[in-house]
Length: 416
Ligand code: CTP
Image (cartoon, rainbow, N blue to C red; front, side):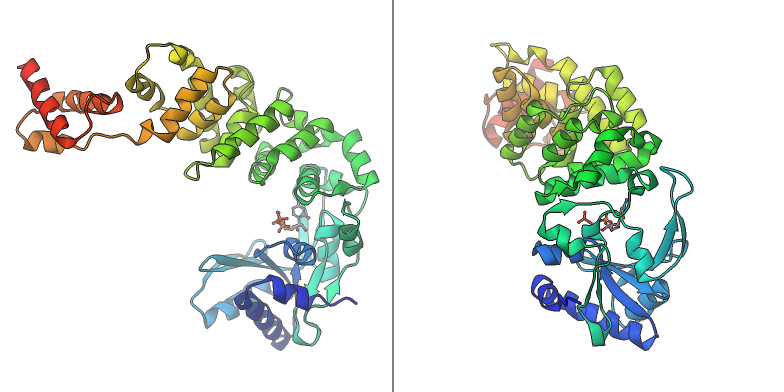
């Protein structure tokens, strides 16, 4: 049996390795077995960084987690219904789960869960490359348990399901397969690909929430367009919504959005808005409903609809920066960014980018309170003068505090 303890210890921070050894020792003392499982094992073999630790216990995961947390200043979240616990400290977290045996009553349903062995637990998993575990008990620390040929598939760069009924058990695995294939630069194993290509409609049995979670995970990948393109090619993307496309246009726009490189903005939100940019209003609404999108995502898409309807005049020649600001300040910067990327008009693109890079940060120095303290104005006129100062700053008619004060006094003069 292969031992990958060296790979693990060279990949993981020392603190995490110490923790894994402690788990192994504690489990042994309790007469239990503990295993590191899933993505972190796959990535340790591939030498890809991954610090998300998933540990399976042949025994009582929650009680073991409690014992570990007792002597430390860690947070523990228990989920007794699922026999799982999450330990977290600083930037790290660790999931401990009780080994489970799963059976599916019908396609797309959530599985029925019983306690099982590590063998049962690995057999319920999605792909061979995710169905390996590493023993943590001290006498066998680092021993790889690979009953489904995961290591071999890693070597041959293949994403392969464990059994032909896997996609019927859990059709979200169709999207997961494409995500791993594209993230890792792998290929779908032949039979796995055939099952996806011939049965993309299996995704119809999945609830909107679960589909959304998968789409969200795709949008969090480094290059989501690769998975979306592959999903389009295999007829899978159309199952999310018939009008959504994963084509060259989308790939180009995602790339441009990354190039604009504004760390203050959420890329997944920009990607989502670009993915739905070419949909009609009705199509966008039906997509929001089908995928039961959470508030932030629905807001992002509705904001995209609104901005498309309100920016056509932004390509006029005589437009002032303050007009651009007034038009765009009611939209999320992510929406402005996706529109800057998606618009066909170079003039509009340039103006949206100016807004994002400069105009949205321009503010007058004087506040409403300052104006009142200067004894200049009271009541709702404060807001009007503030906007006049703001607009003058945006249009570069004034550039310092003195000029702001002078303009404020002039404005008072004109209104009295
Ligand atoms: N899993 C599964 N079927 C699913 C979801 C998850 O079998 N529909 C299993 C896989 O073995 C996976 C593990 O549960 O490795 C944890 O799931 P997740 O956290 O989504 O995957 P990771 O591999 O930990 O994370 P990633 O691969 O995205 O780095």
